[in-house]
Amino acid sequence: MPELRILSFMPPYRHRHRGLTTVRQPWIWFPLMLGCAVVLHLRIAWQLSEARSARDHDDECRPEPIRTILDNFQHLHDLPVVNEQFFRSVPLVRSENAIVTSMYNDAFAVPIATLGHSLNKADSTARRIVFYFPGQVTERALCIATASGFEPHAVSRIEPPADGVFEHFMDQFTKLSIWKFDELGIKAVVYLDADTLVRRNFDELFAMPFNFAAVPDVYFWDPGFDIAFNAGVLFVRTSTKMFHHLVRQINTARYPHGEAEQALLNVFHGADAVRLPYIYNGNLAIKKRNPEMWEALQPELRLIHYTLVKPFWRGVYNETGVEDMHRNVLEKAEAWDGIFRDELLEWEEVWNETRATHRSAFTRCGWKDGH
Ligand SMILES: *[C@@H]1O[C@H](CO)[C@@H](O)[C@H](O)[C@H]1NC(C)=O
Ligand SMILES: *[C@@H]1O[C@H](CO)[C@@H](O)[C@H](O)[C@H]1NC(C)=O
Image 1: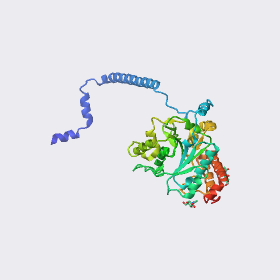
Image 2: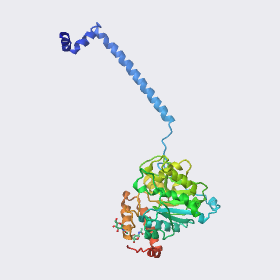
Image 3: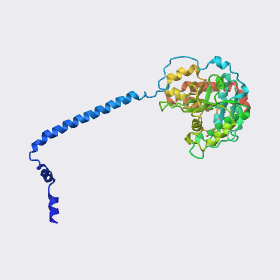
Image 4: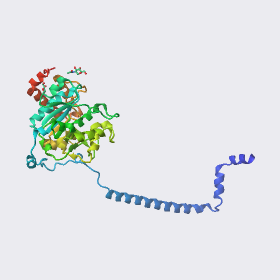
């Protein structure tokens, strides 16, 4: 194959040269290329300017990025949140309304007693009920939890979906039991997680005609608009029929199972929930997100919700003694650069008052100061 060998030894420029030689005068390429460059340049410039004007037009049409009140708070008025005159005209029947909390382990004995005391101070008119599963809390802890006025009510555990619930949310579906409290003669419930502390009376919630209400959630790491609600504070008109309907959805509705009952309620009631003002769920995340707004809420704030840090929580599920509690509060006061110090000490102050006020009831539970 001699021919092939010759080709393979032929230097590449020879091909090119041969191509070029078809044009006799090589200098003619210079003006030609210059012309092409000018045309190309003009074309690119035109395309860029088209793209820019399309973008400008887009910017004019696109709405401003949404900034919620949490990102753009301005203290513009001090109008009351509740219309007192209207509220006073609605008769409240004490026995038909209840404030309900949940107790899933002994660590919540003291916070529930403290919550009860804070409700007494706020002069709340409703019944108080703490529900629990027999066998999961000790008698002594239940005795402490109910020392300041909550009635104990045993319920059966509502099973979480078969997969994917975070371990610390495994019991949370039992919260749906509150819908069944019509069996106790209760028509309306304000449910409070046990990590709340009441500041002011909120009886006006019982005068609402709606079936379900809650406060939008707040995520300090996620600026923007959040319409999903936090399930730590709920207003519910009871209905056993609705209870069965809800429980049937636990395994069949589409929601992130990991986020338990809050996620289920957000799909179940997402389109019809009444969204309550932030003063009904003083989530500490609000303070982290916008301290100025937190400050402005203070005069009307009905309760504090210790979400980001809990003064009583030591990471163990048994009861906390007095000394441990004080140490824990001081420790937690340092967390988050100390921004929740006032709220944590406020909780401890109410806890101290609870101890002093209900000392004999605590003693009857077999609980002594210092143990
Ligand atoms: C709670 O449990 C811890 C260990 O997990 C123990 O050291 C502590 O004494 C217990 N406290 C009470 C009040 O039982
Ligand atoms: C609560 O009482 C303890 C004493 O048991 C005391 O050391 C602490 O300072 C009190 N806390 C507040 C906030 O008053």
